Image (cartoon, rainbow, N blue to C red):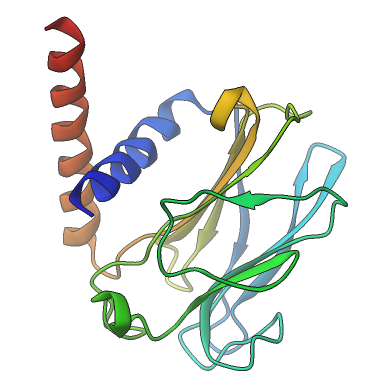
Length: 192
């Protein structure tokens, strides 16, 4: 689990510096959250993401309160990476992150200590748009979630990550620190 957290944190810390394009996707409404489609330039990717507004939220029909969700309407078969925990597939194109993550030790909505990063890749397909980072903002203007797409999946195929940041600024700083530690360790192993 620690290896997964370090790798994810490193990816979040590093991605911001290598991203070709960045855009604010939406700002969560305290009641209705945010549900928005991913668009790069004038290209509609036919992928919809959702992030809660800290109240009951089920935009994709999971039947329970969710924190985040994603629906691939692009006609491709996206595959969730096997290391991902917490996210639940509700049909062939849709995954959600339940608001109650006590089963994996992360707590419940608004009191979570962690929110697992969702990671999908598109086998045998190169992404057709530049690496792009989408920010979802909290109502107070702080960063809530990050979605990014790129050609860095297994074998160089298209990939997409959906990450929710911890509820506190201290949590974000802790994750970034862990990411830097992971980067240092990886560099030392390569030199050895």
